[in-house]
Image (cartoon, rainbow over all chains, first blue to last red; front, side, top):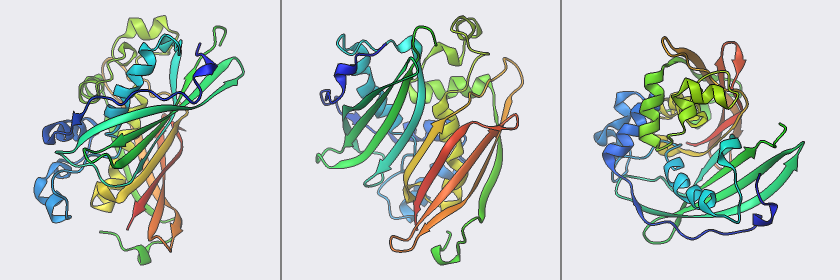
Length: 147
Length: 138
C-alpha cells in the first residue's frame, strides 16, 4: 500500500553528508570498477579537485531522503512489498570528494496499475553553496495484496 | 579518450563479463548502505516469494556503467544515466552469477557534443535492465 494523497508532498532537507575519498573507493570496488578508477592522480589530471563519485553513488544520498518517506505515517509505504522499478541520475556537475551534500525529496507521482502502485520520487541533491548538483529519480513499485 | 567526431551510431564501445557472488552482495550492501536481507538471506528471500537471493538492482546498475566509464576515461563525463529493472539476477550461495554488459552508441547530439550510450546487460540469456542509457559529454 501507499497513500495516493502524498503526490506532490515535499520532505524536509536531509542533514549534510560529507563525500569521503575512501567511501568513493569502497563504492568503486563494490561496483567492480577497475582499480585505476580510484586514482587521485588521474582525477586531478582530468581537472577535478579530488576523486569523482561513480555515476550511481548518489543513491547513498537518495536513501537518506527515502528514509523520511518510509518513516512518514501519512505515506503508508509498505516497504516489504516494494520493488525497484527504475532509477536515473541527472548531473548538473560532477560530485567530488569533499562535497557536503543535502537532499530534498518530492513525490512526483503516485499511479495505480493492475493492483500495484507506482511511486516516483525526485530527490534533488545540493552542495554546501545550495547549488543543485544532481537529481535522482526513482520509481518504486508497491505490489498489491493479491499481486 | 574517445573523440566525438569519430563515433558512429551502432558502434560497440565496450563488452565485458562480471561475476557476482554472495561476497559481492555483502560488499555492495556495506558500500551503499542497502542492507535489505533479501540480498543475503535465503530464508527471507524465500519467505517473500523470491526465487532466491537477488543482487541489488542498484549493484547491477552500478556495474553496468563501469565499462562505459572506462571507455569515457572519466566518470564525470557521464551526465545522465538511467535504467529500468526488468529481471532479477539470482545469486547462488556458492559459485557466481555471470552477467555480460555490452555498450554501443545509440544516438549522437552534435550540438551538445554528447553521445547516448545504450547498455545491454544480460544474465542467463535474458536482459535484466531495460532502456539502460547513459549520456556522455565529450
